[in-house]
Length: 100
Image (cartoon, rainbow, N blue to C red; front, side):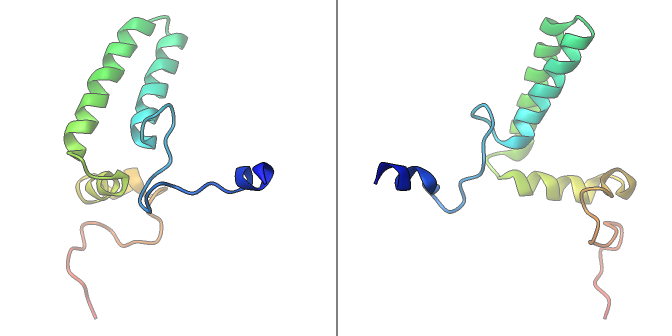
C-alpha cells in the first residue's frame, strides 16, 4: 500500500505550481543565474545582493499574482524580438485590435 501511495502525487490545490528551492520558477531562475554568474566571476557575495534586489523587484511586480501574469506583462510591454522563443504562436503584441 505504501508503494502505491508514493506513485501518485497530488497538489494541495488545483493551482499549486511547481517550486524550486521553495520558490516559484521565475524567482528561483533569477537567484540561480545570479549565483552562477557570481561563482564564475568570483563575485559571489555581490551577485547575491543583486539577486536579492532582482528577487524583490519581481515580487513587487507580481504583487501576489502568478507566473502567467508576469509572462503576460512581459509579452505586452517588451519588444516582440525578445520573446519570440516563448510566444511562438501568438500575434505581435503591437497588434492590439482583433481583426475578422
